Structures are given as structure tokens and as C-alpha cells.
Image (cartoon, rainbow, N blue to C red):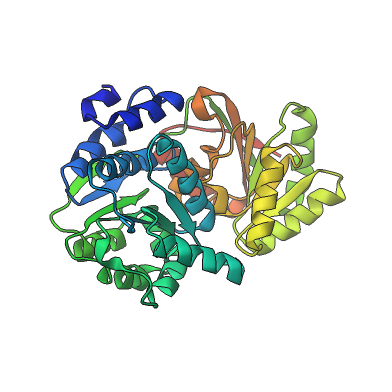
Length: 372
């Protein structure tokens, strides 16, 4: 199947050609026609399946087919500022040959930034990408005319609920027109997502892109190792792999991220930390340095396990076994992207053997395990 089957406006095809988009992914094939038809949808699709384009392209096409007015048309709600900025960047590419605009709205900035966000809303930026808390802050004031909202997108809905945003999302949706089209995208489909969907969606079309297994280009290995020996093991692993210039080390908590980063620096490794405890500027600067090879090791919480696109990650290390098999898939999916190869290593202590066997069962693969 090719994109021309969707009968988009020519401006969109020009952008797709410029961005080298050839064929729609499965989630795009299923979601785009439904969105163009005006259906509410609930879609289970992971990061990396092309879901952003699945909702952005049909929304842009609808914007091009209507008479242009200076009003907010589409609200995209996402859990983190990093993901909001990434979606905004993607929209900029898709909308390159159109007159449509977008703006990312999130907390943590200065009063000047808040004023810019207000102006983007007042001047009628067509697509607003926002985090729930900051959107609610703007909705408290009468400068936000919600009557023109035609589309509401909830992206990474499961993550937003995990972060405690259920009531905020309900509050936000209730402030928008009841006949607005609502699109819910989630990497997983637990009961709480079903509950949310039943509350806010009207006769939704269901799309289910099954959990993808780790890419075939990822070499997966595990080490049985005591916690106190893990930093030395990382040092030994990296000495043998001199070509690994981008390494992500996933850790379960902010406290552990800080401690492990500190230990890595003690043994003269060029590392930095990434977690929600950092300021917006610190996080942006850290990602920029990592992307530009100024830092080659990033110790991080699951804040980087999905959503943020970082190219050429050679090695992913799970410092502990993640509790959820899907977290494991998301984490190691940071490497071997775009049909490249990569390596994923997981450290297992004695208490985590059962957890790791659960992961092997889900991915239907026995992973080579080395005793250290």
C-alpha cells in the first residue's frame, strides 16, 4: 500500500516525499482512513510504529480542506515535555508546504515562555501539543476559546495514567466540544485505559497493532551478577567494545541513576544522567550533548525508554531487570533502529530470575545468560 491511497492534499505528498516517507506502516494503514472518516479511535500501538504520522497526517489534510480561520483546531495531549517537543518537530516537517502551524506547550519554563504559549493560543495556532498540567493552567483563563476544537489526541495514554493524570484528562476533555473527534493512542491496553476510553470516546473504532518483538538486529545477552559488582562489569564490557559511541544505561529510580552515574565518573567514564528531577534546560542540554557525541554514556530512568528519537544507540544496558516485559522491549528498542544492528545487555541478580524468565516468555526467545 502507498500513501496516495489516502487522497491527501498535494502539499502533504510534497512533505512526505521530502521526508522520504515511502509506504504507510500498519498503524497508519488502519488509523488514517478511520480518522479521515471522523471516527473516534482507540489504538494500541507502540513507539516506533509510526503512530505520530497516523494522527498528524489526516488532521493536516482536514485542515487543508477547510476554510482557514485563526483558531485552535487540534489538541494533542502527551505525558512529557520531551515528547511534546518531538511531536511538534515532526508536525513542522509534515506541514512544511502548508500554512498550518503548531506549538508545544509544557511547564517548567519562565514567565516569558508562558506568555508565548498564551499568544500561540490567542492567535489561533492550529495544532497545540501539550502536557496535561500546563494545558489545564491555560484553560483556567477566558483567553482560550475551546469552541473551535475539532480533534483531541491522547498520545501515550497509558503513561499519562501511570503518572496520575486520569482526573486531569477527564477535566480537560469536558472543557472541549462534545462532538470533537477523540483519538486515543496507547502502547498497552490495561483496564484503566478501557475505563478512560468508555468515558470519553463515542463508538470508537479499535486498532490493535500487536506488541512487536525486539528487532532481529539486536543481540541480547544477560549476566547473572551481584549488585555490588555491576559497575565493574560495565567497565569491563565497555573496554571490550570500543566502537560503542552511544550507550544508554536504564535504571529503576532517580536515586539509583545519580549513584550509578557518580560511580561511572569515578572510573573515568564520560557519562551523564537523565531523569525527571532535572530542569527542562538541563534535560535539553543533556540530550543535545548525547546526540552530538559530547557524552557517550547516559544513565537514565524510563523517561528515555520511548518517545524520544535518538539515532545510532549502539548499546543498551538494563542495570536491573525491568518489572514489565513491555518496558524491556521499549528499552532495548532504543538500539538497532531503522534496520541497523545493536546490542542489549541485562543484569540479573538472584531475586530477579523469575522476572527475567517472564520477559523471555513474552518475547518468545531464550536469551544467552552468562554467570559473572
